[in-house]
Image (cartoon, rainbow, N blue to C red; front, side, top):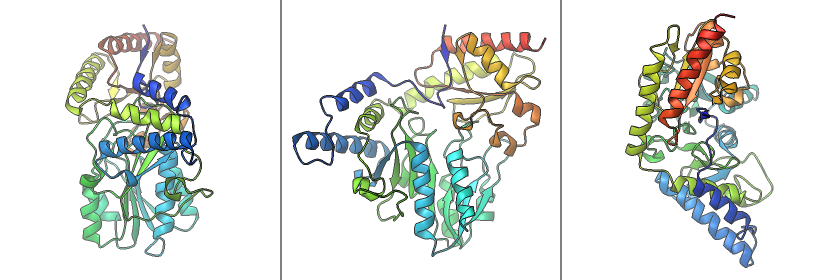
Length: 376
């Protein structure tokens, strides 16, 4: 049987999202900026979509800016905040284990004269709170930390950032990349104390091509694109309404957190129990990681070889972030793992639609890989 366990890379669109995409292609195919009936129908659908996402995040519709995905939203957050805040200071604080869209944006900001400093992580991939105190100072204008690490599932101390910023007397805006957390943990930007928050459609069973940046009311960002008045001039250009409508439908279809969390935790526990029976398998994710994501290593075996072996048996996992395209993991390196552990790493990521049979199929295929590939 096919076992798809690469949901941190992308998820299968849910039926509600597919139906919404079709509706936005026909009959509601107008341009939301047009003033005739077709345009007004599209504008109404766009506003309904904005309200759906805002309701899920507990914020106002005007605080939602739609983008093409998480990468664009992260770029808008970092460059928009840094340029808007540059007269207040030059320091940007982020972590050593961020998604490449944050890491590469931060590197480019360093090239432009900003001081970028990196929070270290412990052996579980988590930023210790004392690291925040060490690096956030009065010159800090932006702090960007992901809610959940996309490779090992470590949950970061986002709620500690606001009090650290206040204690330091810093003017910093706080950004959270919540792409891996959205739909899997209860999220409220207000309760989290963040000014900016990134979410993505295709991680929650919506279509690719849509994401959003929450921008707290009153926060000013400098646009990084120009050419239209859409999305409060922060993201000009005709909105990708089919993708946005599908995103909103997927958000509306998200079940209550306790039910889904219990189901996925049970799947994760079954996975871990099976992994612990296999000699030579090392679990890299912390015990309190988000249950949707488990990172393991088989030292002595190569990730690519194992991926090919599993794929031939219709079992699909990854060796790390899909955006890294096979590069050695910065996350595992920052956690202090050995070269052998990094070279033999696999990421297994679940969704609310994952079945017990898929877990068992993976465990069977992995054990086959472990026994057969070790002989070669």
